[in-house]
Image 1 (cartoon, rainbow, N blue to C red):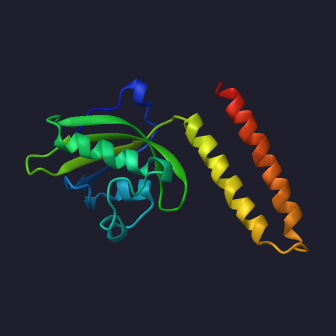
Image 2: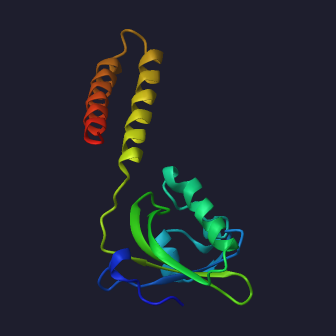
Length: 172
């Protein structure tokens, strides 16, 4: 199993318990201990239908799978780092993740909560604002002229427009 996570990756949460999962090189979850299942907030049956990236927020799924594939084909025996995870209950949490290649080719993954705030990259936040804005504009276009929700939708669009302007001004 990997060593305790170093400071730059985040400090383990006080009193937190590490969980372990076994993954196939193709990214399928094969098995996990109860602590890992609790951290992911899923049952073993549900976990066995998951792959690497399935617990990533939508904007990070492709990146997570790409990094996994790069690591699997590398000659590195282990890797570790921080990750934002979307649990089965819909909550986001930060985890330290350690990967250790096993003699049989499978990968042992150790996960542990860290005391580190969840942050999104500025580009991701702008992308989320634009996505919400577009969705609301579609709803507005579909709403009847006398629909009571039109005013609420328009107000939310105005707020998202201001949020977009604020975020893009900050990135310059």
